[in-house]
Length: 130
Image (cartoon, one colour):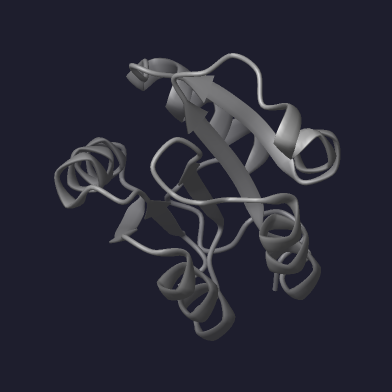
């Protein structure tokens, strides 16, 4: 299903909260708790996007570059309590569509999903996808 949004957060509780928000807005969401699980799931399941917690997972430029190289239509939205990530400069410039501040504002999250990950969650496929 192209509507899938993967929430990658080390904390099952926090990942579950984000999935609940997405469910309320009719997105199909799946929480994952490691970068290995994220890589394998994206590789084996077509999805619309990833919400990636930059604070709780050991994300680096190489991981994000490879994830997006292998999945060129993938939309990546970061979340963080930090305002500056110099270690992710390449990814912020080239692969991450938005980085949202914590605590997340539900309306802002949904706005960015619709803006960067292909519109209405009820559509069967994002624009440009088959």
